[in-house]
Amino acid sequence: MRKKRGYNRETPIALLRDYKLFAIACEGGKREPAYFRAFQYMSNRIAVDLIEEIVSDEEALAINPNKSAPKWVLERAIRYIEKEGLNDEDDLWFILDVDRWEYSQLKEIADFCEQNANWNIVLSNPCFEVWLYFHKRKNIKDSESKTCGDFKFEISKFEKGGYHPLKWIPDLLIAIENSKDTDLNKDYFFPDINTTKLYQLGEAIIEVVGKKGFEKYCENIIPKLLQEEIGRTKRNIKDNL
Image (cartoon, rainbow, N blue to C red; front, top):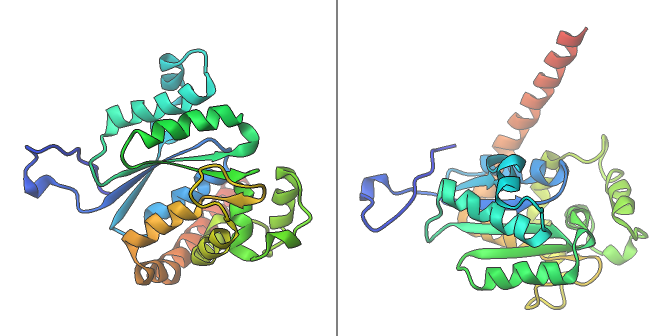
């Protein structure tokens, strides 16, 4: 990934970036970061930063030792901006699950985003796995899943070998369409049960990359990434024998 440069009016034209940065704060475990990390290989027209990988837990605790939920997330994002810089074309996205937060906490972050250009909050109800569901299935009413654990188990059965982000991302356009059709209250930040607002981030990325660019990524880059991962796995197994 190319080195990011900050922007101000005195920055020479030759030093300006020619790509859009998507800075993502996702408070999940391994699944969310692995999914969004794969986006960084999609196109030279975008860069993707996972804030949690740049601002460590130790740094965040130094800012907010009480780890108050909304302030923890917001101040971590602010610390990231201080370190990395954002220009007027860049986006900051908070990717959060309803099941892990109180409504008042999410509303606090949503209000903060309203006051800052290019800051966005997209929620999944109850969890990120609802977004993953829409990659492979259209009608979530057919699902019997009630909890996040249920959804995790259900989507693990959709593909042979279970869930893998590189096998889900080629269905991004389908997920955008399916989840957007299900969202009956698009102007409100808080999603209904078993719906997600993550299609908004998907649309923002596709707008920059283009559908043809996304198709090239799926056809040319994802197979290579999968092959590299298989190679690493084999080497690790060999080294541990």
